[in-house]
Length: 395
View 1: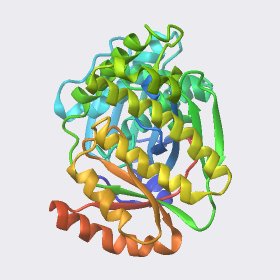
View 2: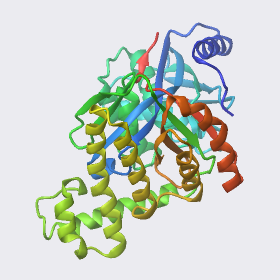
View 3: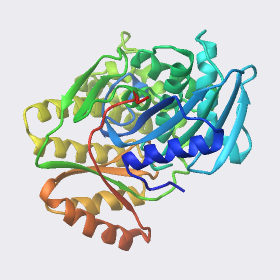
View 4: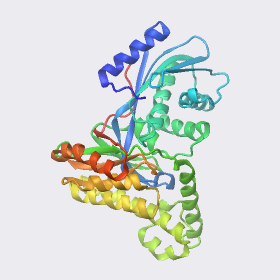
């Protein structure tokens, strides 16, 4: 159960609870945010382009170094503790302690990379909704990395922190993720979204409108049961498409290298399902780049159209949407003043993101939940958000 506390009181809460649990004041306080991806879905593991923003919900960790090699962690969200030693870091298999695998993963990867680690006491508190596709796991990984680095006197450059967090999630947690979630959590900029080239890891901070337009996230409250298996299937289908297209385009490494013109020229060489998967990735990369151009030109209407096109592609070509996501998108688009709406994240549940005229936000909050519940029987959660700063050491 998430604890609904606002920024200042959350810091007070975590520091107070740390002192009560460990009998000392925390000397380290870090935060790392969740994220919402505005456009560019399922492109990051195809070396493509993504356009996420950090959101104003985050994971806080209060900590203090220990003199031994033990890590004692306590999660306020679950009221559960977990202890492990840095000499033998193993995944927690007990359900009550599995939340600690993200902390363990970062300790493990720092050790694997030859970076110093030190035992610590720590308390975690997050208000990124769990299981909603807003990257609560990336936020926990990045925050844990900052906390361990602070305890050991390390300065981790943000891109390296993101790469360490990605490796930790892939190799220790066992989820074969792309780089987007960790990257935006580590490098997000207030009032900006980041256009990230996931191959070169170069990025551009693009200002978001400071008036007139608001980002609204809608959580379907549909549990994402198919994500892991279907995610791996989609990756394999994309890799298959590359292997077939290489016969005609030998220079390509990933779908990111296939232009729209070349795809149209050689698409008929792909099996029908593989062709649709590849078409989504190729067109989504093009949409992402065009959306940034539109945003820079102040063309919010075109940006919204591209969001709508993205959802259609995810729904029909990549087939990672679901009835609940489609119902939420339909409900959002029925509100006058909504420029665009699409699913965001891996799919099969989770959240949608909408770009909404600020004067229409109140109507959105009032009407969309009822429309969605009428269609699905589920009660959604609506989050009006702003683009936030990436991971920070606060103390």
